[in-house]
Amino acid sequence: MRYAAGHNEAIRNRIVEVASRLFREEGIAAVGLARIMAKAGLTVGTFYTHFKSKEALVREALRQTLDARHEGLAPALDGADVETVVRSYLSPAHRDDVGGGCAVAALVSEVARHPRATRHTFVAHNAPTVDSLAAWLSRQRGMKVAAADAAAFLALLAGTLQLSRATPDRAASDAILEAGVRAAIRLASYRGDQLS
Image 1 (tube, rainbow, N blue to C red):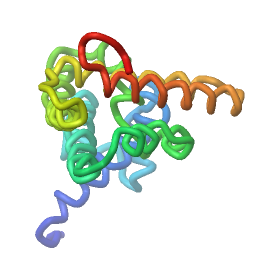
Image 2: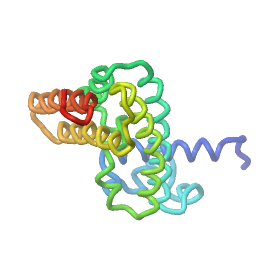
Image 3: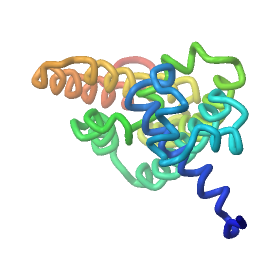
Image 4: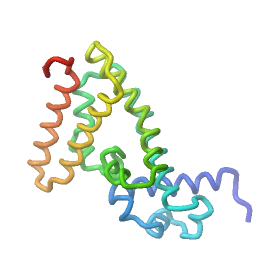
């Protein structure tokens, strides 16, 4: 049976999309290939037509998710003030949408235990976001912000989101988000001598 042009690419993209959401919701180790393929409406045998291994799928899911996040971030930062950006990221809606949310917050601690190639994929495809944050923070501060400082800013946001997600009490979780907002705003305004 002959498939229409683009069929294989569409199937591959469906697998990646389903895997990306499941990895963020439940963790990479917790999600097996059978579950991913069933959720995509495909057989496990079909998986190996598109990927050599689960680790190859993890790398592709990271690549696509991080690239898509960066594409959405650049316009969001254009002309936006610090509080708007920070509150958008540290919102109850983002906290509650683990599967559709930031891959950094959902997966960074797990990716740290993966093979070097996977960690390299994560770093390479997160780098444009860090660079965009560095440029945006530089505009906010009126001085050059290094990529490492922008990465620390992202880590504050992602770590706050992780802690708020791990806190079962809604009021306490909301309080963590709000404390993170205040800390991120202060960090974004930091000029080297004191926090404003």
